[in-house]
Image (cartoon, rainbow, N blue to C red; front, top):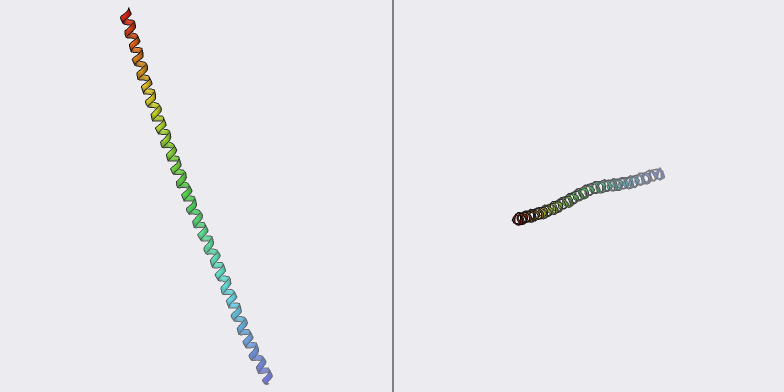
Length: 102
């Protein structure tokens, strides 16, 4: 009878230890799963931030290129206007010379 009681007590103790180990394992698994989910979420947020940064950089670059092209166009227009004025002056001067010589 004492042996049976001792065996039962040993079994109970063993079961308690096994239950505690199982609970600790479950807790570790849950912690790992939670960490992975947090990492995934953080990675998604980081990816979104990176994409937004890239989009802003591309927009800035595009704006700069547009500004540069406008400036080149303005310079071309100025040069064209100067050339046209010069051509008109030369043409007018030649007409005046021809008129004077006639």
